[in-house]
Image (tube, rainbow, N blue to C red):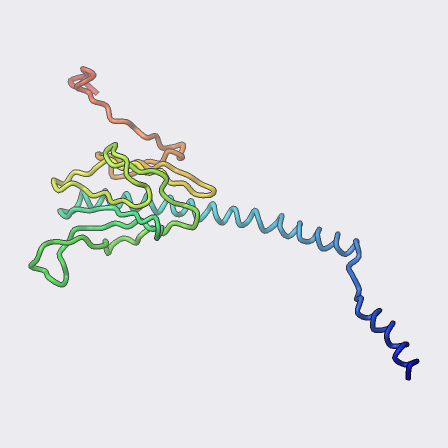
Length: 199
């Protein structure tokens, strides 16, 4: 009996040691992981860049809709940004559906969808008629007389950034990162003495 117990002890110790990885196996697995990372990571960066490009285009479209609704309608319109939720939405002052005879109220525009910013992207700075606003949360509205302010937005993401300007006289916003677009500054022809010069 003693012999049996003594002979099983070394076998148990040998079996419990197990088999480790060889250096060759570790190198092969590391190489496979590096190859996988080299193919996947660039694709993730491209996907993130495309998502940010799409968001910038959606912000441009929303500013274009803001200008269109202001020009074509009689209602006051506004843009509202919520940094915590990461959304930019178009609002309109319209009749209250619960009380049509009452005062007009601000409600989200039914003809446009809010822009949802991807993680890591948001408004870096914003100004309305040269007045800076807090970039975390802001509202810009058209004036009651039908005019609208000059809007200057700077967006920043992980891969892309853009400055978008909507002038008071234009219905189409301009991007600073677009080589075809130039952001024009207003010129006071009277101050330059060129008010009556032929064009």
